[in-house]
Length: 171
Image (cartoon, rainbow, N blue to C red; front, side, top):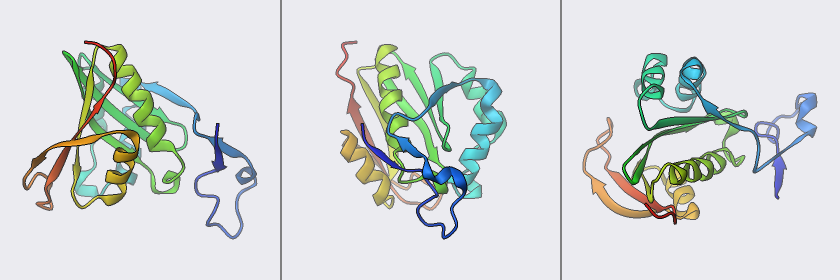
């Protein structure tokens, strides 16, 4: 198990007292319910530009749909996944700026892939902007492979790459 400084503590000249603690790659993840929609919307708003942020209502509605689950990370991250038949789709993944580069996204991705596999998904898909090199590097490191491209997919007219991660589980 690797440990790393708590997110947000490295850059501060006068870190808070709890910055002496460490966060492990297996930090606390918990299942989101519709009651967590407000928290999810706040994390999403911190992670994305205002015009791309999802509302509390959207998260609440999504979490009530069959086959949809969400995870929250105590440091400030979320993932929302839909499983249908033998495929999972990551609907959104967001990490607050202060929690980035602390293993939060990796933990969310790995745990959600395990849950999706347990629900019958043999593969998990997502879209990512061709302009998002940091996310692309993360997804590649975890094992996602490019399987397609959607032209002018995002509001800034950037293309999306469609990525796939095989879960290794039979359907």
